[in-house]
Amino acid sequence: MVGLILFILISVGLMGYAVWPAVPATWKRTSRPSPAPADAAPESLEGVLVGQLAAATISRRQYIRAMERLAARDDKRHPVVVPPETGSAA
Image 1 (cartoon, rainbow, N blue to C red):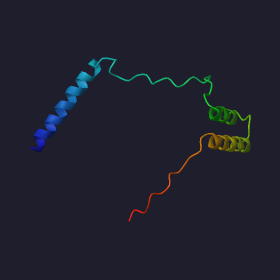
Image 2 (image 1 turned 30 degrees about the vertical axis):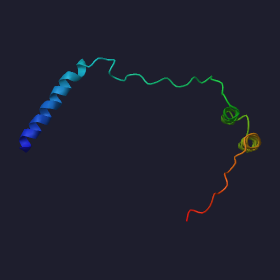
Image 3 (image 1 turned 180 degrees about the horizontal axis):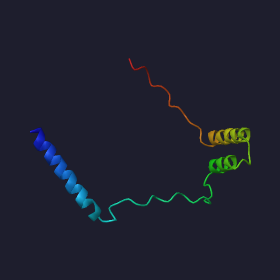
C-alpha cells in the first residue's frame, strides 16, 4: 500500500515537472509591483515632518515637539468624548 502511494506521488510529481515549462508566462509572477515614486510629495503634515526628519533637516527633538503641537491642535479641533457609564454590569 505504501509502495502504491509512493508510486502515485512520484508519478504526479514527474508529470507536474514535465508540464511546468508549458505554463503560460502570464500565470507566472515575474515582476514585482513598482514602489511609490521617490519624488512623490507627502499628503499630510505628518508626512512632511517625517520627510524632514529623514532628510536630517530637523532634529529628533524638533520632530517630537512638532508632533506634540500637531496632536494638541487636533485635540482642540476634534475632541474625543467618552460616553458616560450607564450603570454597573452586575
